[in-house]
Amino acid sequence: MNNMVGAFVRFQKNPSSVRYASAAIISTFVVLVLAGAVVMRLFDSDSYPTIGSAVWFTLQTVTTVGYGDNTPTSTIGRAVASVVMLVSIALITVITAVVTSMFIRSVSREQDAADRLAVAETLARIEASLAAVNDRLDGLATSTSALSNDNPPDEP
Image 1: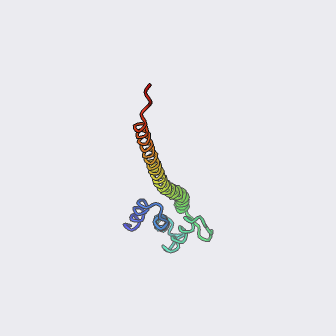
Image 2 (image 1 turned 60 degrees about the vertical axis):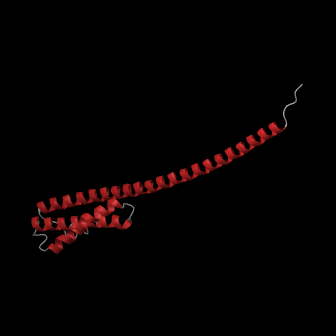
Image 3 (image 1 turned 45 degrees about the horizontal axis):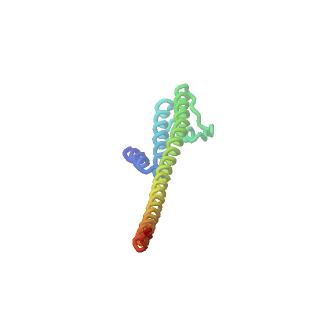
């Protein structure tokens, strides 16, 4: 169980990692399949005499494959199967949304960093250009001042 929690912690710290996202998704589905199988085995033991048959049914249900070769016969078994179906569909939707938003957020952060770097580089070029213009203006002002001191205006 700690390993599964660790998968989510690693995914939250580095959401752009496909490896961590995959580990989080797989961990969630493993827990859902095993928990669903245990519940099916407990509440519909006539239809699922072994944990293996319960796991097989739950795996088919969670993946929405549902071959139909193994269906619950009791009312409680069907109710549990319905809950597993609804939870798995909701889970797929939520996981897809979370993974997508994490990827988008990660890409957005990277893009923001790249934009800030580009702006900083542009500002540095502008500052260097302004400094060169100021130097040239100072040079012209000095030259003009020297010329006016060498040739005083004619007095009448």
